[in-house]
Length: 399
Image (cartoon, rainbow, N blue to C red; front, side):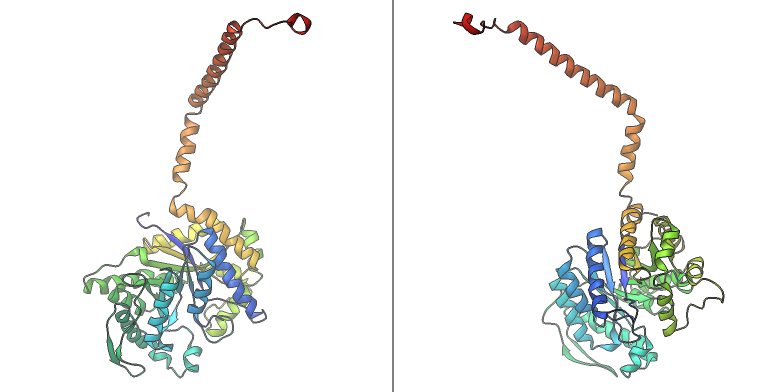
């Protein structure tokens, strides 16, 4: 492996327990993005949700506008905008404005909407969401390209719609679609030449679907005379790291069961057998990592073995641990996992080895150089002594 230049980031739904102060939670999410920016993470994707209590960011665009002001380098993506909930022109306008305001750091992630409760509150039949996503995405991409769009569907109308402000990024910001288990994301990515975010890559069902969904994307792309770029494929998985596995488990017990309870409250997906420890069961069944940087490396290499090359690994932000331990987890990832895949330390390792292999030669030359300097100094002192005139006597004799 090594043809792609792997990048690293987070996928921030976020998950905040109901007993915490929501205002403080949002501020902490912003602090986390600042922390990741300083650590050198490449990107962060921020979700959109409207119900169920934990995932309290309703507008990723507003969050990104705040985060962009506090950061310098990290790219910021909508992870994702639920297209059926919005008129396509409003989405296109907001993303283009963010593209200008962030000087090209924004990315546009699109999806159908995850929570059925969100759709039902808006009077949207969840059965229609994937089709509506496709209808909206087609219009948004045309608007990004500067086209004039006239289109009527059963849920939106455009009559000569066009953007009066075109994207800062040419031809437009990076666009990504989510993919979990169904083929819908791969089909859209292949049709429109888009990036893909596999949000369930470490879930056994999502893991098994990785290769097939990527193949679907490639097959559809080939029908349109293109090929998919693995550098634009992102895989998502949860992990918490510490110096030891024991410490990681101790940290994660702070919030893991609340996290699992929230997910099962929406849909019973993680049924822990009676009598088993939920966190140990989760890790043993490879839903995610709770361990050391070496465990994180092993997970990503396992994904590479399954999928082949991919461009970005995104940690699912989950609040298993308190904030200090969470920040420490990301720090360990940046210190040890990121350079493993970028191979940033290979020249340093080679230089260390070369110096060690030639230690005796270099030491002898250094000692010879030092001896030569001493010899030169002593010779100059002797010459100065012989060349100096006799000094006058001190005191009365000097007169």
